[in-house]
Image 1 (spheres, rainbow, N blue to C red):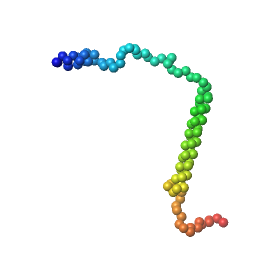
Image 2 (spheres, one colour):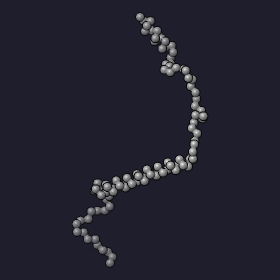
Image 3 (spheres, one colour):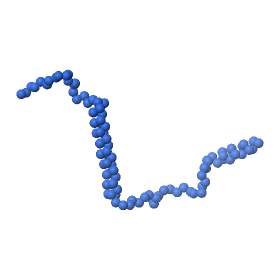
Image 4 (cartoon, rainbow, N blue to C red):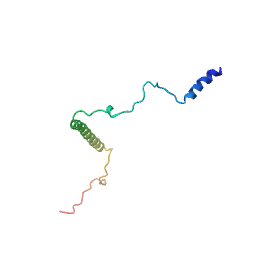
Length: 96
């Protein structure tokens, strides 16, 4: 009975390393042959990406401007541009 327990433990201890995958394929170091080769014009790709980035920039600025305008008009945003003047206040003219 003890041999049934001791034998598998001894086999595992003897190996020292668990091998979950078979050694059917030896490890092969990557080389430059596996890298992709550029194709097409870099200028066309660059212009296409810049067009997308510029559209995102304009869209973001429009959204920011719209959100700021809505917040300002709804009263949720107070800009502290100056003190609130009392009702009926008439500004003094220093120059004629």
